Length: 252
Image 1 (cartoon, rainbow, N blue to C red):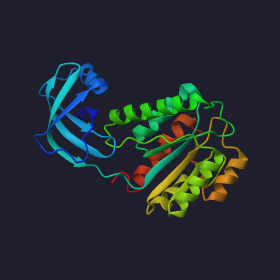
Image 2 (image 1 turned 180 degrees about the horizontal axis):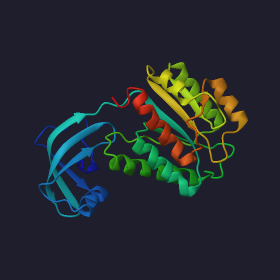
Image 3 (image 1 turned 180 degrees about the vertical axis):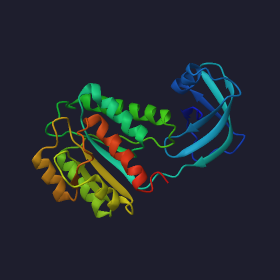
Image 4 (image 1 turned 90 degrees about the vertical axis):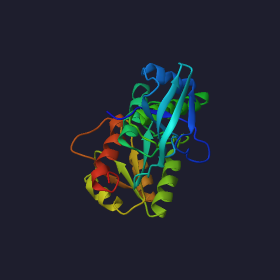
């Protein structure tokens, strides 16, 4: 089993071997929950690709001190994957974020699709986005990632179309995952082999509206079918990200 991962602030530069790093607050509490003690080794990450291999020198519950053994920058996988996720029902929202983060997604964009049952309005929007971000943070640690996918502000259909135009304009690829299409996912994966970034658009449980499909198609997205079965919205983003892994350079 790999070493447990905790979030830490390294400052401007990667810490040198022998440097001490202190964890407090929730991260120190997590060390205690996992029953780690002086002498145990851990990974510390900053969420932006920097990883430190360290050894705990002091763990008293509220404060943990670690000595740096080595430090490095982890390369971000290519192509960069953004999942535009239509808002699932409340009991499915955190599951969707958790699964796609563990699958390796690089950025998450909440989308208020026409057929979404869930709505983010007023103060609820900021609270819901913060919950998604917290879920992504914990899932990234669970998956031992040094990169934590950022969660964007809530997007409208027009916002998503603008994102697609930007990505395609930079030479990237965009795909709408839609069970009624016939073009296979493999075609999009083949197009993404030499691309720097790809966007997957995942609709709500009720599916992507026909007008939304045309809006995204006009912006440069290609509607594709992911596979022979219809996936729940909470699983589709993770499945697409995972399927892309062996078909591109993402899995090395």
